Structure formats: C-alpha cells, structure tokens
Amino acid sequence: MSDLAAITDLDEFQRTARAWLDENCPKSLRGGGSSIYGITGGKKWNPSNPDERVWMERGAAKGLTAPMWPAEYGGGGMSPKQNKVLLQQMRELRIPAPLVGFGLTMIGPTLLQYGTDAQKAEHLPPIIRGEIRWCQGYSEPGAGSDLAGLQCRAVEDGDEYVINGSKIWTSNADEADWIFCLVRTDPDAKKQEGITFILFDMDQPGVTVRPIPLISGASPFCETFFDDARAKQSNVIYKVNAGWTVAKALLGHERTMIADAFGVGGGSRMSLADRARKYLPASEDGRVSDAALRDEIAQSEIDAKAFGLTVQRSKDAAKAGHQPGPESSMFKVYGTELNMSRHELMIRIMGPQALGWEGDGFEQDELDLTRAWLRTRGNSIEGGTSEVQRNVIAKRVLGLPD
Ligand SMILES: Cc1cc2nc3c(=O)[nH]c(=O)nc-3n(C[C@H](O)[C@H](O)[C@H](O)COP(=O)(O)OP(=O)(O)OC[C@H]3O[C@@H](n4cnc5c(N)ncnc54)[C@H](O)[C@@H]3O)c2cc1C
Image 1 (cartoon, rainbow, N blue to C red):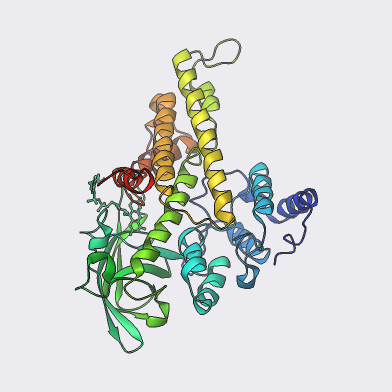
Image 2 (cartoon, rainbow, N blue to C red; image 1 turned 90 degrees about the vertical axis):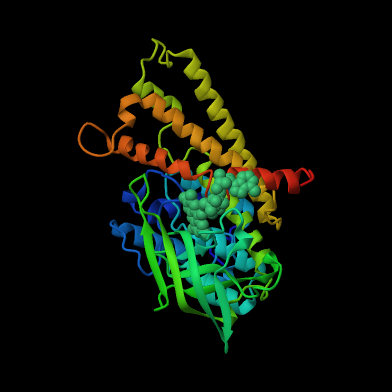
C-alpha cells in the first residue's frame, strides 16, 4: 500500500499528498493537458523530456499510476475518497498523470474483474510500473460495428494458440509491447460464442504492424497482421469461446474512459470565455460583445460541468464495485459529441487563426488546436460509433424492442 493510503484523515491526506506532489513532480511538466495523451511508458517509449520518465517512476513507486488498484500488485490501495482528493490536488497544481494508456484504462480493470490470480500477478505490476504498453486488437476490415463477425483465427497447438488474420485501427500498435486481442477459436459456433479473449506479445516474428496516416497529420493507429503469431493458452482471459463476455466488459471501461477523457473540454488549457476574450472584441466591462456567442459559451460550459459531475458520480459508483454497464454508451455518445461541439466552437471563435497547419503567424496552441479539432472527427467512431451506441441505449438501457 502507498504510504499515502495509510493516512485516513482526509485533511492530513490532502496536505501530505500536495506537499509530496509539489516536491516530486518536475516543474517542466506542470501546465495541464489532456488525460489521454501523456506519459505512455512501455519498452519503446523514448520521451523527449527526460523528466517524464522521472515523474512516471516516482509516481509508480508512490502508487500514483494506479491509485486505487490493490497494493499487492503495486497499486496505491487508496479509497475512492483519497483518490478524489489526490486528483483534485493534481489538477490544482497542474500536474499530469504519471502514466496513461490502455493498460490502466482497459486491460487492467478487465484483468481485475476476469483474470486469474496468476494472470493478475503477471500483468498488473508491469502496467503499474509503466514497463509494458498495451494495444487493443478488436476491429477488423470486415468487423467494426459488427464486431462479433471477426475472423482472426486462433488454433490450438500444444500449450499455445497459433494466430492468423489481421486487425485494423489498432491504436498505437507500433509502440505497444502487448496486445489484448479477440480471436475466433470456434468457427462453427454462433458468432458471439466462438470468440476468445487472449493476450500476447507484439514483439515476435509473426506480428507485422503498418501505421495509417490521418488528416490530423498524426499516425496513431495501424493495420496489424498476424502470420502464425503465438499466444500462450495461459493468457486466455476467462474461458475459451467465452471472450465476448470479457470483450463487452472491456468496452464498458473503454467507453467510460473515452467519455471521461474527451468529454470535458478535450484537454484545452484555455476556457472558452478566455479564448473568446483573446480573439474577439470585448465590451468595456470585459465581456465578449457578441451576446449570442456568450449564450453558446455559457451553455457549453454548463453542459461540460454537468457531464463532468455525472461521470464523476458513475466513477464513484464504479469504485464502490459497480462495473460499467450499457449506460457507458450514454456517456460515450454525450461526452464525445460535447467534445466535438466544443472544438467547433473554439475553431469558430479563433477564426483564421484556427486555420494554421504549420509555420510562422500561429502560436503553438493554435496549431495544436487545429489538429485537435481534426482529431475529434474520430470521437464519434472510436470505441463504437454513436449510431451503434444509440442502438445499445435503445435496447439495453431503455428496453425497446429490436
Ligand atoms: C480514433 C480511433 C481509434 C481506434 N482505435 C481502435 C483500437 O485501438 N483498436 C480497435 O480494435 N479498433 C479501434 N478503432 C476502430 C473502431 O472501433 C471502429 O472504427 C468502429 O467500431 C466502427 O467500425 P468501422 O470503422 O468498421 O465502421 P462500420 O462498422 O463499417 O460502420 C460504418 C457506418 O455504418 C454505421 N452502422 C454500422 N452498423 C450500424 C447499425 N447496426 N445501426 C446503425 N448504424 C450502423 C456506423 O455507425 C458507421 O457510421 C478506432 C477508431 C478510431 C476512429
């Protein structure tokens, strides 16, 4: 257990955590930013700022990379209340998370729910220490929304599976060390019933990764090919041919994470009102002079605040043992659409300054925002499209007929 977790008095916890954060997070990292882009860790990680590694290692040793995970795996062992105070202190000091990634947000929580003791002991500590970075092998060229139609095949061979097929849109596959992957183990069963959830090492001869360039100029995801790749049977999560159950649980974590990461402003460091004051004429009392725009800004801020509080309530429930269910689809739709509309608003406020791609005449924040805006086009697709989420809400939340 982190020594912080042992401090049960919340006022004392707050003072001690704040002092430790202030002393240990390198000054060069202060300043905020999105929670989805940040310190990723992993064997291939080579941060341009060496302070990132310092902060990751200090944070991991203190239990702050996974504050509420069990201490036996290296987590902080903190209570939901302690975690809330900790996150508040980090926000106030503008300190980034010491580690982000699919290990912490997707496969880790899924292993805590479905992994055996041996699987947890093998995989959770390297996630917490930032040593292994994970990617997600779900989508295939013919299986996105219809995920259960996936064809990537795994055939038993001794105590291993041999995997052949391909995945697409595999975020950060070129930088990941391990993959959590859906494979078809019984081609004769009904489609949901022949799928297995398995983990394997990306660093092996049977795995080829090809990055896909995007309009944002980045290339964050890849085509991933498996030609006789190998996975140990001991890395099947839950049961052979019962991977659909695990896959759905993980999607609940993924959708909550996407909603949470994008839904409250997309990591923009400047409020909408400050941005409007910077780029648009202000009245004498310092308010944005366009009354209609003022309304839009106020509404968007209210929506973001209300959404942030709703997500927080659901996270508190999750910490009390409630696993995310189909309601995560509501968060996913609302959070991502909010993020997209807020970026549209920011771009409108900035006018021609939002049209920069590179070069002089634009501040770095402006260039970053243009790319961030283009990146938001993927929000309504990743983790399951908005249309598909609406189907899930209709059927599984509202109980409407097919
Ligand atoms: C930024 C980003 C990151 C991603 N990262 C990963 C990753 O790491 N790993 C991974 O496995 N995948 C990843 N994906 C892929 C993502 O999960 C799929 O793109 C998504 O599930 C949609 O599948 P598709 O692209 O095949 O579209 P399709 O399923 O072909 O859908 C095409 C269109 O048809 C609509 N549609 C389909 N079925 C229905 C229906 N039943 N009712 C109504 N409308 C429907 C869809 O809403 C969509 O508009 C990522 C995608 C993005 C954009």
